Image (cartoon, rainbow, N blue to C red; front, side, top):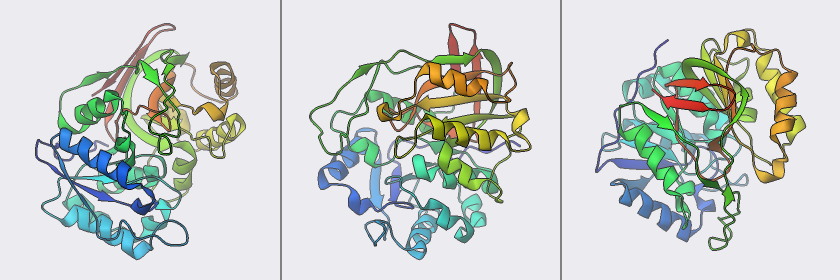
Length: 327
């Protein structure tokens, strides 16, 4: 199945910030101010949905409020793109309440990551439109934001021509939302080539634990002919948890027909190493000819690239070199 790309974000575009998971109320005034400034520097204006600052006992808001904000963002003719404020834990509460016909008739770029995984993949599956696994509004609230985030956000959502995805020069895993001043930059050792190969396919996935919440539901996309995007956060997971979550996904009936896997960088406290990950992959019944590339710049470390859920990705790798192209 071919998925349709929503209209590109042009200079002057209006971005609506919604909170389908945790509340925007969790963000400090300074993070909100800095993030708004980043969008303005990109040439975009921002507005907040009616209920995105509502905050209940679960640091979220009611299903009714979140669904209204989601639907309003797609229906509002002045809104050109939609970005999730932050991730969280409960986006899957919304799935059976979403009017997918409404979204399909009003396609717009929708971007987020982590818990937003379920919404992105469900919308792509149900509506046939590409969504975007990339930085949330809160991500852009970093005072010391790596230009990598903005560069790939614009490449993916504002241009139609193919481009290469290159590794960031440095990465970090600081609690920047607590301390914006002290940042520990780590030299990036590049992509980890776990299995070489050449392929192209449609990208699906995101946060592995969240993606697996779709298994057995009508919202789960087919794995056949797909490039899997997989990443994890360090709370409360570890290499053993990644192993069993991956095992569950790969036991699906169509998993043998996947065309490649891209694995995002693990957080420092996850304690994943290239050696451990290689051993985990070796225990799985995966076609040995498909490329598996890890340590890619998406997930819960900084910086983030932006990847199209439902978009086509090409991978060309030998045992030393790897090219990833967003088509």
